[in-house]
Length: 316
Ligand SMILES: *[C@@H]1O[C@H](CO)[C@@H](O)[C@H](O)[C@H]1NC(C)=O
Image (cartoon, rainbow, N blue to C red; front, side, top):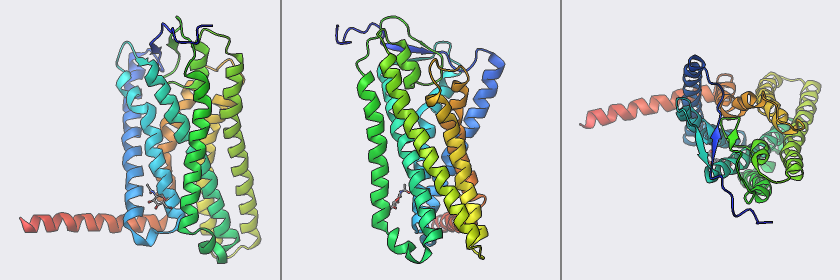
């Protein structure tokens, strides 16, 4: 045993998504558009919610936090992937790789817990409306958010701790566009069976468990809404269906990537595109295009921005 300190490999070769020049140009356009849209859309949501006191309620605070996390999710792998598309040798250093895995799992784990918190928030709002503001106080929101970040961090570090010292001594081709545990572990020159099991157990478990909790809570809420069908229920239904859409798009790919027994499927690197870029850019669309209060608030924000620009012009 050499303790893994003599690794020869100091960087990995990412094979990317395809070799075809034409498809790469298409991917370049596709990813750039999605990335820019995702950043702008999510930042606009955060800005709108923070600046508009009509939206200072738990649901919108959680939504702003989700958008904030989504800017992180889409910035971990995508900018490098876009930059790499036209490079012949797409390399990433060992430390770069570990950093990517750390952030993917911290932010991803936090987002999963946040989705549960958002489902809980909807449950209280719909099933216990009279107690909503006392239960979901600002303090409660902050505690739940802190909890989400702590769980995300533990989830990430608990896997990273086992792989930071892995020895690498030759194999360095990673058939993906970013680093993640399943393929990273495969490249180590040691018996990795237990590590693979650990990652499946940890990442697989958190994805499956969260997905299961969310689906059960949403079914429960839907049943409750139908029982007390009142005027508010169609609005509740549209909010709920937005949440459920996000959940399915986020967890579908995750579950396939982590829960699928090894060896890794070739298709999962394409599915990873969903979690890396498509899902984070869909949240703004799903939440704002369907939400009247958000649309009104955004119009107010634009009106204020315009009058601010006018006042600057007048003072010159
Ligand atoms: C997240 O939520 C907290 C409290 O619920 C709020 O004060 C904060 O502004 C939110 N953060 C973002 C980035 O929206």
